Length: 160
Image 1: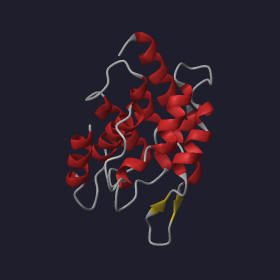
Image 2 (image 1 turned 90 degrees about the horizontal axis):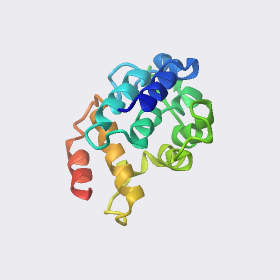
Image 3 (image 1 turned 30 degrees about the vertical axis):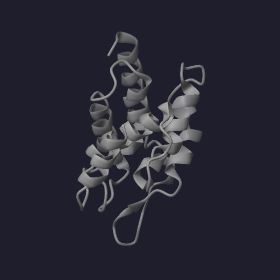
Image 4 (image 1 turned 90 degrees about the vertical axis):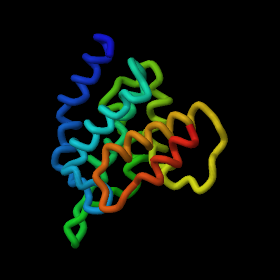
């Protein structure tokens, strides 16, 4: 990671808005790692498997920011995040200046980061879909789920 990306990452992690992820529960089925904050840091760490000095490391860090605005506890003690991907993309400006190189692509990836988890067939082989598939692998590996995600991860590796 070069110095400018390091500064950007530190400014995001220390952003009071990003810090709110610490108070958003992980969820019993897919995110037993504790909080959306811990999950986001794990996904960011996993992103270095695919990208070095890349905008996608920032996407990995910010992929679940919509949970800040949509996360709510359910009666059973679990959490839900309706439309968190879309809402996260809409609130990206709170974390990155809109003039940031690749802003539109970052916004696209945040808005669509869940889609690869529901692909039934291989989608078209495009740079965007490859990026989303790699992000989904990082996301799944950064989750402690009630059931194994190995089949999904392997399916996504086969795609890329």
